[in-house]
Image 1 (cartoon, rainbow, N blue to C red):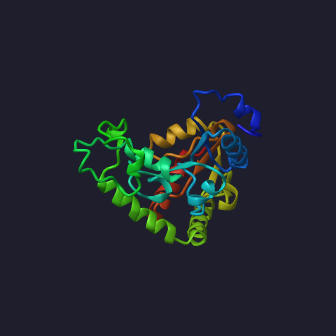
Image 2: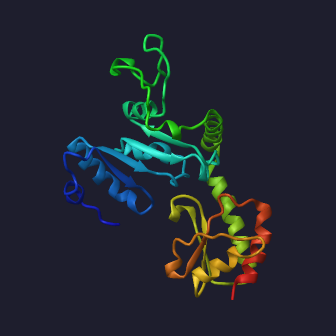
Image 3: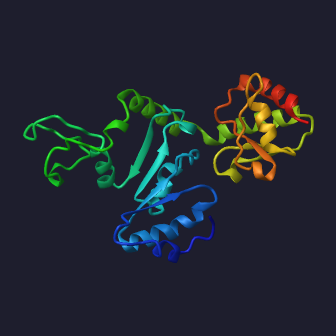
Length: 251
């Protein structure tokens, strides 16, 4: 949760442990170097779940530079690619191993030409029965993800966040001084968001979801009486009806 110490990971290690999973976010990233150091010292693979850690685009390489062996990103969310896609980055041999598990080859060993990512010298035969066969990404998802990734890395994060922040300020102003607070991207580590404080956050969220149109806000901080408006997939033309829905539901 916080203040991770090396002994906590070491206490969980045993001969049957081959990897450590680490879910990274703006709060936990300070502990990533500790996890990386322990894993490296014990020859254990460190797998980082960074599904929602884009933007900024620097994160595409940041966690690997901090010592992660494998990093997984969602192909949807901020990337805007197909929801049934993702990126696995990191050590070439481990990514190749994951790729092999997506294969189920009904071919002759003498004629099989593996993808360039895979070193044929490390294989004793053709991977006829990969356990991940039923979960592989289709060619359409791959092309869509590569296109989305190309657009993402070419985008201007500062300009995008400035535009999102301006829209959130306008939404906040339209709520006529309600208890709302703009949290800038520099604080969230991703994009600016709008926090809305209400007496009973879950009841308020339920009313929004039953409305027409339905509105879904993040309930991550509902226990503190706060709902969060994340504007990443909110189109400009949605701002006005969103304001009206919030006005109608707010006490």
